[in-house]
Image 1: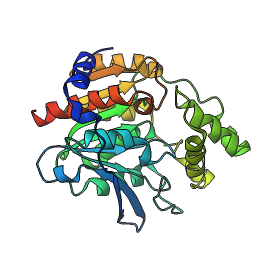
Image 2: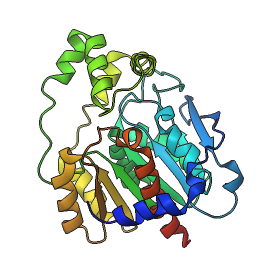
Image 3: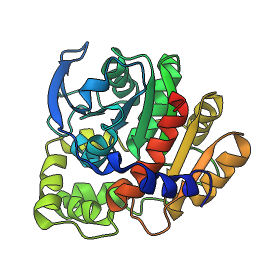
Image 4: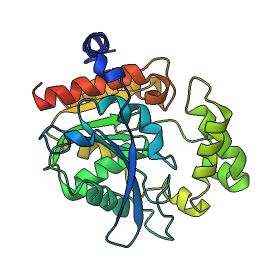
Length: 287
């Protein structure tokens, strides 16, 4: 592990405010193409203080609610906000818009009220955060956190071993296996069942479209390398070599490897993840 690891451990001990939960509220906004998207937020009292807003984008077919431990803990110091992308969580499920470009436009509209944002994207959400930067620039982004997603560095990730075919053949079984596999520590059955039901709200072919963005891997690498502000890349071992290569090829990149966590590492090890993110935001805020 590198970068913020020691600082994060110290921060866990030194900032007891991070352990106190804050009230999480929900609201909606309407996109330019008429889709109502749901947002969860906490720490609203910090909204006008000039400190960074911490904004979260979840992964494929997953809800903003997965970020609850981050929203609650970090809201003691920052305004925190998480998006249910179209077709996910409690957002509308429109018939169209399941492209990298439209989803990046949704992020742009989600962030439009803000001017100093630490943008956190997990899995597909990390890719869509990069696409947002490609299309709309980094003017309002003060820091970027990419969580357990390929960023186009070598080595390329292993093939999905038939996941799309499995979705078409038996969607229930594929989703059940997927949801359980993203956690290293078993979650309550009611929770995983709810995540599967939520994932099924999106029509099958639209969910598959999200797994099939028509870009070469170098597209994401070029965007990450061009981003000229603080970047933190937090991964599990599957992306450890990509993380080390990004650190080498993009000077200033910070990396952290969660050796024993699952893909949803911020759920498996929330205290460690929250401390890393708090330290990153504090540095950006000059605290």
